[in-house]
Length: 155
Image (tube, rainbow, N blue to C red; front, side, top):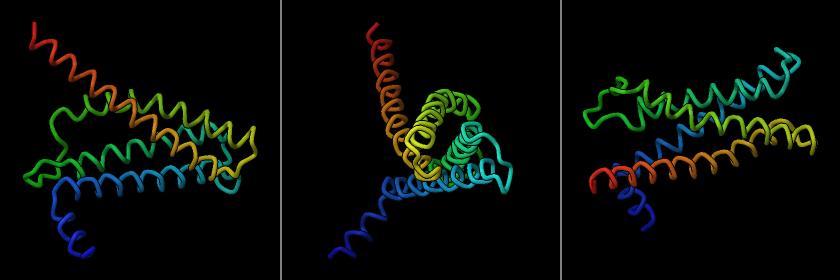
């Protein structure tokens, strides 16, 4: 019964797209952690933790954007090229995620420096909290866009 349900669900395009979205998000966490380790660990670069987090979050954000463009949300023809308007979408995505990156740096700094959490636990908690922030902000931006479209039609 459960196997039949899973097989049925995985045939649904939106379910497959959601699974891809989650896999891309997971790859972003791996990128964030790996870059943070490379930059912050004294055996590698030994950079300041906050600067390392800023760079690691930026790398993860670009990773997620590109994989979502090329794989998760590619057009129905299966074309793996970037969609038209990609630069505009990247700027918009970066503007919203930029606030999230700033929050992630602050949250990680709070957990790591003030509360003495392990660096990677602090980073994972920051990622999880900022994911909620980003989801909320993107949802609000989408609702605001819809409201503006309705107002334009009504004028």
